[in-house]
Image (cartoon, rainbow, N blue to C red; front, side, top):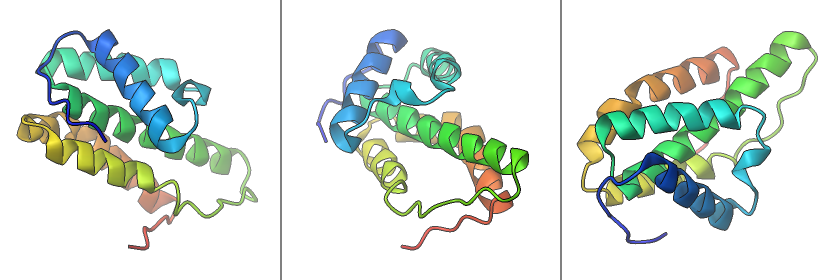
Length: 135
């Protein structure tokens, strides 16, 4: 994790930085998820609308990626009741990392407000799919 609590500059620059941090942390390219363009649009709207710092933007990107992933699982499950959801314990590291980035940001309160709908949507999908985190 980097200590780069730079203030808001440009959401596209911050998106590229957040994607690089994601790849460094989790060893796979965020652009592989089907809904990545939608996630980037949501990211830009939130970052620009709240003028989030880099640390907050990285946290937001990680949270949006996780939401995108569980949304895809939900779609697969809706399409095929027999679809098996594997062990997601390693995948929850993304949420843990999002929390760490948020705690490093000077604008964590603004991020919490901006990310509230994302957190609620994620929680609803996880409840619907009966996903629970083992901490």
